[in-house]
Length: 197
Image (tube, rainbow, N blue to C red; front, side, top):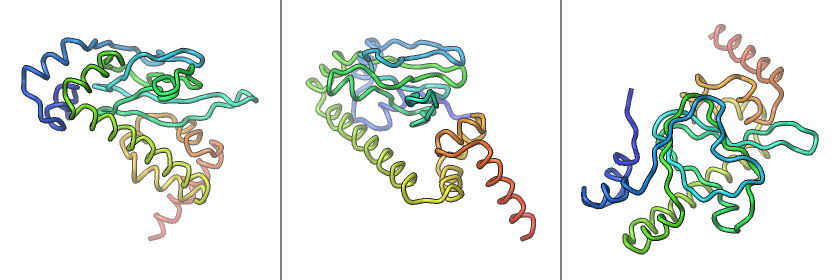
């Protein structure tokens, strides 16, 4: 299985020397989590950016009726942060939770701002991560507003084949904004159609 680490990400994506990368690593914490633990909960302030070295996270919230909605999954090699806290100094509306044992690198936001001053490439990286997040959420919004439930599922399978094998079907249904029963019916219909080919 491919190994991910903050070091390998920085080496692959930024033009930094080994000494510079070592200096960055020295100022980061690596924490290990069991399945079901929280990195941040609703109404908390987040002062870190997280990097998933190993494991899988989800970001979710509860609506006023207590129904859970999964906004996003974060597998290995993803940066995660709470943008409302970082950019607007507001408490999080979301929970970020591990879905399996996970190894997470913590980067303090104050240190991250120093990195942007020291290395302009970090400012570019931060912008790119923000733009990527906007694109992911725009694509998700378009999917929810314009695609059928079956098309949403097929897009999920194509985009996140690995995640599909790592999370319960109830969570996939929540992410797709359909009921578990609808998801079961879609999977059954697709399997039946494929068997007739």
